[in-house]
Image 1 (cartoon, rainbow, N blue to C red):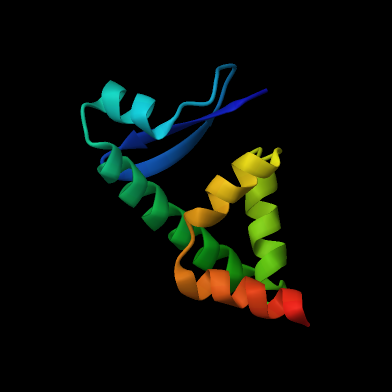
Image 2 (cartoon, rainbow, N blue to C red):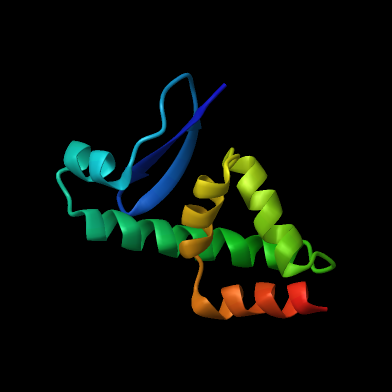
Length: 102
């Protein structure tokens, strides 16, 4: 079962249904908004989900939280993971780098 990301009223919803992944351009075209707006909404949503998980699972490392999110969002390939990771704020990316060095 695949998941689609749907944007409604500046909120991202993950919908479980049979379908194909959509690019930022495809989402923007379908909703008649800019690709930049899609990117900003995705970044805000990813950040919000990250901090909600971090608050709920206080014993999880940053890497564990991001890995959990990637699993939920069905991120499988290296390319998908790189694109997904780019959506995170620099501070969170820095935490991942710090954890990886330990």
